[in-house]
Image (cartoon, rainbow, N blue to C red; front, side, top):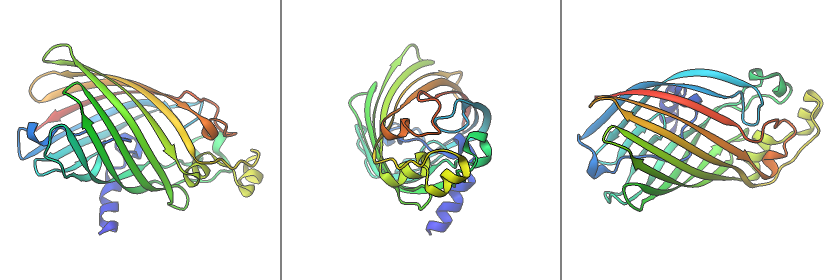
Length: 262
């Protein structure tokens, strides 16, 4: 079963750069207009070549989102999972998500460090909606990194304001704690990697890897079409920020996504 789920998730890996969101973002089941709610679209992004890179790349990917009234969801943003709560103010459940690959060939500054493959992460989430405009979110994910034993624990908050029936602004903040296995895979340099890359050997410890601020504008063009544009900036902190191949501690991602709701 895990293999089947993994293949399914990898089939959607092209969405959002082979990485699902830290947090699950669901419409409360009581607000869903249909038993099955589905949208399809595309997203264009400008982002660092890897986390901590001072080089950028442009990318475009298909996007999709499906949410069922019974609590199931399958999304390029949220992953594959189930929300057990029927309460509009509370969401909790299990999901399978993706952690993006880091390919050595993506940048000359990664030469000698090897690849870190896309990882399938089983995990759980808990969200609390204080009202329609403010929510708290958390998640835990396991399975990333070279030996698939990386752990990520994320906490965040999101505020939304309705400018008009068609336009909505959102702002978010989040922090990500990771264990030493995750740190070593994505920010560390082993003795062998040091010889191959020329970077000094580096063994980071567990801790807060980054803090992220985000903002977005959502436009409901009509009853079917919508456009979302936004940006996020992270601050690589602690041992992550001190990695010898982190050249930009404040990476910025800019995106624009169009979707059609069926």
